[in-house]
Amino acid sequence: MSQITTLHFPPTDKSVANLAASGVTGTVVKTGNTVIDALQTVASKAPVCDVPGLDWDQSRVILSTVHRRENWGEPLQNIAKGFLQILEKFEDTALLLPLHRNPTVRDPLKAALEAHPRTFLVEPLDYGQLVGAMRRCYLLLTDSGGLQEEAPGLGKPVLVLRETTERPEAAEAGTAKLVGTAADIIAAEASQLLSDPAAYDAMARAINPFGDGRASERIVKAVQTYFSA
Image (cartoon, rainbow, N blue to C red; front, side, top):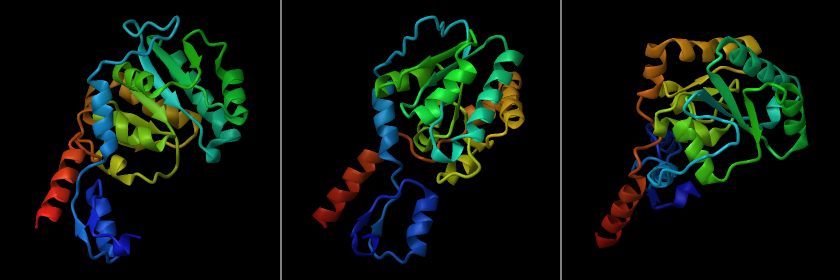
């Protein structure tokens, strides 16, 4: 399809390079990802994420989502162990974990984590609640692809619970870091961000490679220019 497309709107420099390497012939305009536009629109309304018993002002909240198939089984158990190590080391932290509906994911996480008093296992959040949680959390531990793009748009560091990612731009920009699923490594990487303000700020202040919230404007302008030529 890309070979016959007239207007291309890739979100990142790497996407632009990939199109060039593919030999596309249309007009290419780097715009950023429109998901960041949507994120900032929702965030501007100051959505909340109220969770019974969770005091956002008293705890540094770690927001996590885990669901990917490659993490089922032993990796999921190791991830949960890493969470517990973090909670035990930092008494001012709490874990907010919306549970995937798949029992293959949900049941092991509940078994491993629900007894801990600073773990809050909740049902899946709607998008407004998720943005509210991202706004208030301290950092994210996730295997989600989308959150690797969105959380940096709110200045939140992301530790990626995977060995590889289809969003290498995040790791290259320093907004996210691949940490895998080994419990000790997860705990060590999170510990650095929880105990070293300089390391935290370096990630929190890194420029999000996926956009600045103006992708839609650039797309509209490019389309208008094309049709007025």
